[in-house]
Length: 533
Image (cartoon, rainbow, N blue to C red):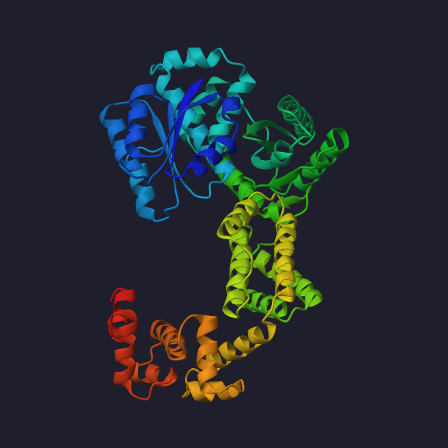
């Protein structure tokens, strides 16, 4: 067994890492946890772990400090970094100092499994006898099929040089009849995640049974082998022509697995490779297609040859979201449900096969809706803890349909609160006021003119506005004007006096003074700083 230490300044992250992948099944024991850089280094000194998975940014010593110290002491410990930081410099520094990999939160199970597998491979190779004779002696002790599976696994991972792979193939006296290699990625993760239906022993039997069934079917279409990738299977098929019908093979796999084992699997077909040297490209294209399985029903077959999917439609997405929010404010339940169908379709398009993007877009809908309710004076009974729980649960859904059902339930709960909340007339009035300001900020809007729009006297309007927005009317209008001034400044080539006119200032000097008061710099200075001129 290998020993590992998990480190993060957030206990919930450590807890999540412990549950994310089957450590014991991989042959790894978690022997320690740390929340600071110093504590981590002390545990490394005491327990000499084979593997450390740590946040790169922690109090009392960063992850970079730790890996430098590990190198200085010439310890064999392998380090995988996880972090919310997505800047290239962090990844570059981490890899430059010898990190196995750098993963960005929220961590995907498949990526963590790949990184841990890479670390285990490096540890294994570091412990092997460096002489070629010794390596060959160890290699010959293994079953030929096991050796091939290990070799092909490394080829798909891209962590073996082609020259070394060729030498091992020659040592195995391995020859291939077909000129093409294709990867079929079989998703079994859902079987592993089903609580209560399968015990650990049953799960292993299921994976074993699926592997055998798939292996038999491959032989009918050529030759190949099956590799286990975490909780899923990577099927490598050696066939004669690029145009061979692997869709048929995938369909037969799916149907036989459902018939004999009564489970659904999703299969993604990678782009054919004309040589083993390009096998990783086929594997990568299959994994990329697997991203789309989240948006499909169970039992789907996806192929690289399908029409290219494209993201986009951000404007339509924003309009669809705004329509839903307006319908909630208007308390039109049927309309809300109908508009959500369109909104979910736009999210699918914009997410472009990325589950994380879909979760973020849908969570943004919830937060925007709650902010809008607050802005119009409706106090929703949703605590920060509930919001955090929502976000965590959203990442756990296996299919997009389950995720959208969850969002629909939350929005209908909000609609129920809106329907029973008092002050609905005031909410409608605030909605009218805000929309009018957004449309007429370039004009001479005064407190008196705005009050007349909603048939209030100026004194009452001033109090009413501050009650619902927590700021005075004049400052609110100024903020709207400044926000649009920044947009024009950064997205157009208009001169400062032209921007001033467009946001409601006839005196450019007054506009510049107000801009500096808001952002600490004059307009042109602000533009130069943002654009790096």
